[in-house]
Length: 185
Image (cartoon, rainbow, N blue to C red):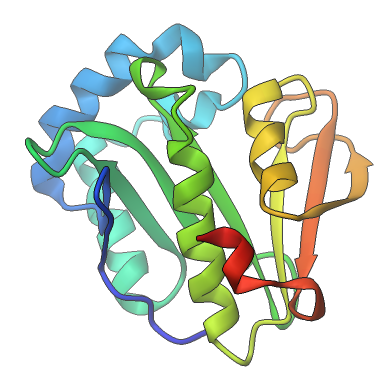
């Protein structure tokens, strides 16, 4: 995949690659959203590597971004850099494909932010001619998360056992031939 830009700007949020300097803002958001996030995305709160500090986690995200392993963004309010959530692109679902993930802080749900951020990353992914498929994986009980791929024209491909502590996982897929950029504005 083409190296994504480190920043996407929109009127109501900025997506930018995480920096270790974001640790205090992220910590505050995670603490305020613990119960909300722990239901469906405990890895956001706990991190992917047990015992790794938040600063180390953000350093790893930055290194992975620069090295092309995966591209994880913080979602920030443009006015004051408050952390609204996060999203990313992960090349772990097969050749010519990429997984898109997202999460929002409890205080920022219900405003379409995850949908708009997922639209930005979907458009970027399909701008790369080497990507033929984008997938979104989510817990079927997370009604808000399930609504995102549905709104963007993804279709349910599969339901399987979850890898993140959930009993079930919905796999939503959008193929290049199905992609309509104008429907994601």
